[in-house]
Image (cartoon, rainbow over all chains, first blue to last red; front, side, top):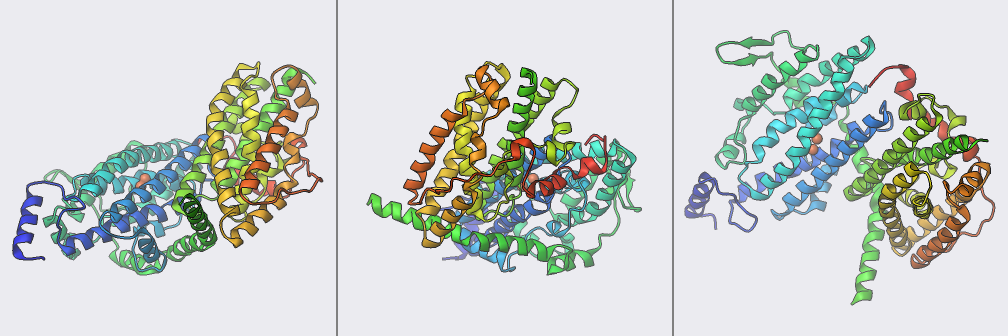
Length: 311
Length: 252
Ligand SMILES: [Fe+2]
Ligand SMILES: [Fe+2]
C-alpha cells in the first residue's frame, strides 16, 4: 500500500541518511528507477568490454597486454556485481540481459565510439573511467544499500583504471612525434563524448529531481561534469596535450573552468542508435549470446542430471 | 649443443606455448557464452601471458645478448616461434577451446609437477608458482569437458568432435629431441615419458566421466618445436606484433 504515510516515512528515513535494504518497504517508482539505473550500469560495464577488448591481442608490450586484460576482466566483474545488485530488487538477470540484447535497454553511449588506435586505450582509462568515477564516487553514498556497497568495491578498481590509463597516455605523450600525435588525436576524439557521459544538462534532465530527492543521486549532471572538467584540464596540461575546446578558460571568480557548448544533436543521435558502433556492439553481444546458447543448455542439463542423481 | 643453448631453446618453447595459448584465449574476451566464462577465460589468459613473461625474460638472460621479453615476443618471426601446434589452433566454438585447454592443461600440470624439482632454480621457482595457476586451468577445463560431454546430445557430439579434431596435436607435447633429452639428463628439464603416462591416465579418466570416447588416432602432427607451424601462427603474429613492427624501437 503506497499511502501517504508510507511515502512520508520512507522520505524521512532517506532524509535521515539511512540506507534502504532489499526487504524494506520502498515506493514502486523508487524500485523501478533503481532497477533501470543499476541494470543500465551493468550493461555499460559489459558492452564497455568490447571497445577495449578490441586491442588486447594488439597491445604493444606484454606489460600493457596484461594490464589491459586485467582491466577488461575487472569490468566483467563489475557487470556481475551490478546484475546481482539489481536482483536484490526483484529483477531477473536473464530478463535484464534480454532487454540489452533486443535493444530496449540502454547502456552508456560512450561505448558506441570506435577504438581506432592504441592511444584510445590510454584515453579511455583516463577520460572514460575518470568520468565514470565522478558518478560512481557519488553513488557510494546512494540511498540503496546494496548499490552503495557495490560501488565502494567498484570505485577502488575504477580509480586504478584511471591511473593506468593516464600512465599509458603519458607514455605516448612523452614518446616519439608519432606517439604524441596518436595521444593528441585520441584526446580530440574522446573529450566531447566523455563530457556527454554525464547526461543532458540539468534543465533537460526530467528524472533527476526525483532521484535527488530520494538520494539516489546526490549531485546534478552539470555539477559532476564541471568537477570532471576542473580535474582533467590540469592533467592534460601536465603531459603537454591540448583539450580540443577553443572556449575553454579559467574563471577566477567562480574558481571553475568555463567550457564550450556540447553537441547535443550528436548526443541524442548516438542514444537513438546512430553512433558509429551501436550496431556492432549489439551484434557482438547478440552473437556471443546466441553462440553460447548450446553451452548454457548443456550446463543446465548437466546440473539437473547431477541433482536428480544426488536425490 | 651446449647446455646453455639447450636451456635457451627450452625456455623459448615453454614461453611460446604460454604466450600463444594466452593470446588465443584473450581473443574470447567479451564474447564468452556467459559473463562468468569471460572472467574465467580472461583469468587463464592472464596467467598464461604472465608465465610467458617470466620465461621469455629468463630466456633473454640465458642468451645474454640483451634481449628482453618484448624483443622475444614481438621481434621474432614465424620460423623462430617454438610453441606446440596445439596452442595456436583457432578458438572455434567454446567446446573446441575447452578441448584444446584440457589437453594442454593436463600436459602442463604434470609437466610442472616434475619441473618443480629442476636443478635450475629459476625454472623450479617458476614451476612452483605456475603449478597453482595450472591446477585451476586443468580443473576448469576438465569440468567443462565433463559438463559438455554429459550435458545435452548436441553438446556431447560437439565436444566429442572437438576432442577428435585436436587429438593429432597432442603427440607433439611429449616429443623428445636433443634439447629435452640433454636437459632431462642434467636434471634441469622434465622426463616427458612420465608426463605422458600421467596425461594418458588423466585424459582417459575425465573422458570416461564425461561419457565421451577416447580418440584412437595414432598419427600425430609435429613441427612447432622446430618452428614449422600451421598456417594460423602467421595471423597471430600479425596481430600480436603489429605495433612494434609498425613503429620499431619505441617505448610504449
Ligand atoms: Fe567498471
Ligand atoms: Fe573501469
